[in-house]
Length: 407
Image (tube, rainbow, N blue to C red; front, side, top):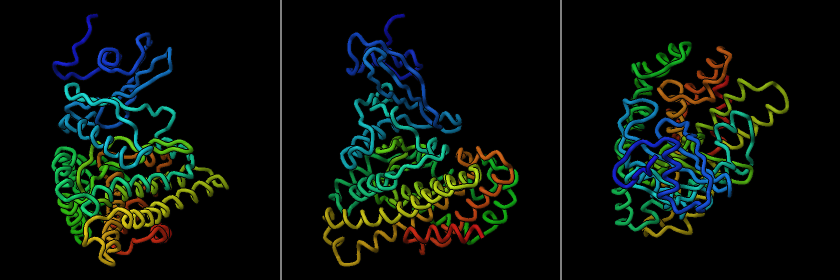
């Protein structure tokens, strides 16, 4: 087979193409490399190839963006999201070194980026489904969030420089997906929703008929669309985090754009909640279950409290904007992020139950009654977070609300 020309025009690669690409385009492997490839993408949007030199035990990841989403051809997407992802990973690597993979190359023709292979890590969602604990996770993920979120704001950056980043990372197609799937479609009987039948009556009574709640979702949608606060990851769930005992790496920032900082923090909290309801529904009663649930709840609390502590510390070290140094402004600014955090956590809990994109934490609960109970908790707790977001300013408030919603 003649060598493929990867310099002329885009095409969707297969495993054999990715091997040829690695041989002819990447300056990574030795000349005597014996390459194999496996497509390992399990997400909704992209193709992910792991290319391995079986002789020298070197490997890379090649991630390619297509013109439509893998989840559905209804979602037409700009392959420019791969450029955005590559540039943001490089920026985040400089802001939070060690907490994101290293990018080796971005290819604008093939719409792909080549990056560090994290095969010695596991996807956090998989680990949580196996009820594994990671004592350093909350510490690592809050360092990542504080550094990437605060250091890309007007508090720290020159305002013109920040506005250039806003312009560079405009991401309308993927923002539209978030606007539809997170803020809009779960809150009415949308034909694209995919709802577990026992849950549908509750969704209608609890959410769709509550005009006060619907008003809050409208406010939050417009805040998401108009608040260019921080360079956010935009999809920071447990499927976008690789972990091992002493390491955490955040991947897949293709939804990234300048938006409200609390969007990232809220997503992390919501997916700890999903881990909690899965464990409650699927683990056998006993010490192992109690210990795991205690760790998950402590992780929820620590995500909020460590974020707060690190945010204030980094603010005191890095703030450059004169008025941001006025007494009390840091607390005012952070409290707004915490309110957004609670609201986003609530919306995420609801949309993963009612919308088109579910989470395995819930869908793999085989007992119908236990799954229905888990979904009910997520909707009730999610609504409470949205409606009472002004009060959710520390980790304890999340744990207290869990107990309230279980009664």
